[in-house]
Length: 144
Image (tube, rainbow, N blue to C red):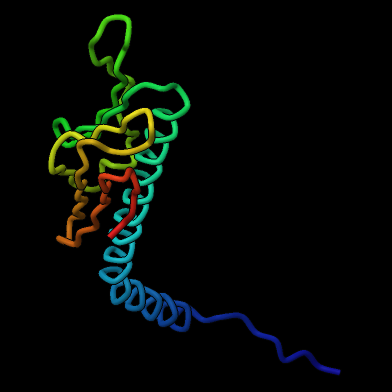
């Protein structure tokens, strides 16, 4: 029995490498757009979760919580009953750095879970696609 196995020639290897590089060059723009869309959806879900968390915290602690956009970041605050002033409880994490964040104004959750000052938070990615997180006066949060 004779063996007919042989290795690849340099020409065959360069041909396959060239085909692979062309495939990568063709698919790169669509992959970039796909990643931008994933960043936008992830940021919208993150903001949605933060708003739900603020609402639950307001009900659980029987105090007011708020969110506001400051310098492109979502700032979170809690009303301190002892001092009668808002105290900063932090900002959203770096996942929002891939999108631009804008707000219609300060959103405040009351201790009963409603939002006496409802609003919207608009997220825009580098391609101009937008998603909006809406907080109604009933305190319901949804993503549009």
